[in-house]
Image 1: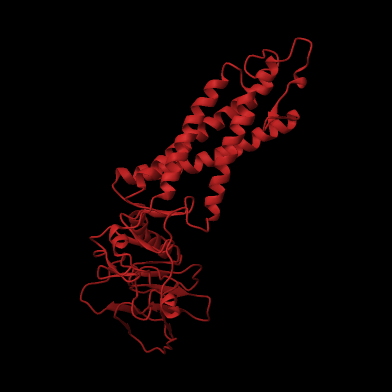
Image 2 (image 1 turned 120 degrees about the vertical axis):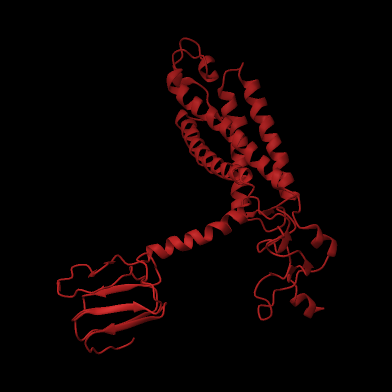
Length: 369
């Protein structure tokens, strides 16, 4: 029995599976803080005629958000084939398998899930299970987002954004009217409760239904506004990104996979050295030897490629010719040439990527690194 258990590893069922992720705890704390402060600190400061609407509208949105939030957490996005098989998740044997899914078979879930290009089933490393229409693993909900809970996930983002905008908007309004409503006393109820003989400093502002100094109340508004702006910005960006994906019929996984070659190419371009070569003349930086004229055609050498070091003993008419009959185009990145004049004498570096033949009209000595 112990041997069998040693070969298996657990999988997470949904977002309620313990332990919770740290970002999931942060999301819960933000939700509770905004909800509690809104009903116990912001609403009591509004005009009495406005308070019913301030309770009802954000209250309904927060209630709907709680429903869709819990639904997203509790739905198990695992693929039906895996659920029906009811097989334990085995540890991947790296000696036998390079990938979790090979030839349409998941080596961890022990289920045929279809070939990689045709199937939309992916194995989540965090949850350790195959998910149908896998989009991504959300750390804020601590669960995978797939075909079964993707709509609930979008509803969670949308309702959270609306609730945060409402609460943050009321926060900004109260902060501004604290300074502008001192004389008119038409918006903030603590000002309206004062009679004509009392100063605005005598107004009763509350946090968690407890009377506090005005400075503490303003500080609470400032902190709530800052958190609200950050949260609104993050959720707006995330929701907008998923709207873009829906419009283009993509998943987050497919989008990231498509972007990897672009990032690799960008990184390669950044590693390219800054020298350049013109047809008929090599132009390294600060090259003082103007007598070294060549018939060379090529481009700059990436610093990370394998190089062949050739030290030139004679500087007369050095030519580089490809093995093919046609000349190497200037934009071909496979033929690379760099001059380094920091050493004593001219030094030539050449990439060993293409079969090139180095010929010279006079004799020279070379050493290969």
